[in-house]
Length: 143
Image (cartoon, rainbow, N blue to C red):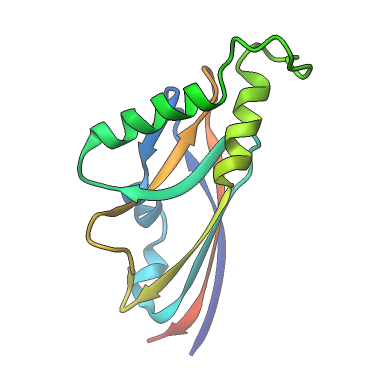
C-alpha cells in the first residue's frame, strides 16, 4: 500500500548551537514504523536555523561546529545591513543558507537509514530562536 503522510513537528526552544534532534523527529512520527521502503523529507520553516546530518556520538563535534560557524560568519561585522533583530540576525540567515533548511532521508523497515555515526542536527543560529517548526513529509510503501 502506498502511503503519504504530512505533519508539522514543533521542536522545543534550544539555546544557540548545534543540537541532535534525531530522536525528537522519530518520536513525533509513529507512522514511520509502518513504512517498508520510502523517503522522509524534512523542511525547517525558518530562515535563521538549519538542518544537517553529522556525528551523533561525540558532543564535542557539535561544539566545534558552532565554533567554526561563528568564525566563518561573525556577528561583529559592521558591513552587514540587515540587523533589524540584532547583531545575530543576518549572520543567522547566512548560516542557515550555508547548511540549508531541508533534508531527504531514506526509510527502510520502519526506520531512518542513517549511517552508524549519523544523526540529524538542528543548527540554532539565533541567541533567542524560540520554538522551531519542521514539516515532515513521509512517503513510501507500507505494510
